[in-house]
Length: 191
Ligand code: GLN
Image (cartoon, rainbow, N blue to C red; front, top):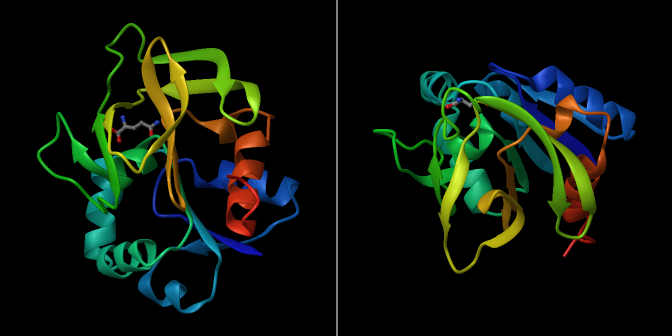
């Protein structure tokens, strides 16, 4: 199995390290040519969704990635990655890949709670560490979307088919369980 990491901006190195710790082969997507390689899944890291969205368009990656995901490529978006996959963003003027039937709210926790750490249940895994950094939350999900985790009554992880998103950053903690969940999802084991 080989998993690609979108390496344009943000916290992509931490995802690469998590994959390395799981013994999963990895490649970086930095430009259109990198898409020629074959890969079984894609991670979209945290960072700034507006910057990543702009780079995706400028580099000509937007359409090919969108098509690849729509055709079933397993994808895991964290934080800004969640925003890139969201079909609707309540407080932004534009959407990006927009392949997932969720409504996200950007920078949703206000200034005081801009960054925080908690532990909460993740469906099928149990209690895991969750680090939030100027994170979004999911305000609404479509019928095909399964909620995987909630914090303070707000959805912070969800799955739709082969698309997985978390508002928090699992790559910033030692716990590898969400990455393992993604790997198993690709392998067809996580339901
Ligand atoms: N606030 C960022 C955005 O709107 C997301 C923050 C993150 O990825 N840690 O894109």
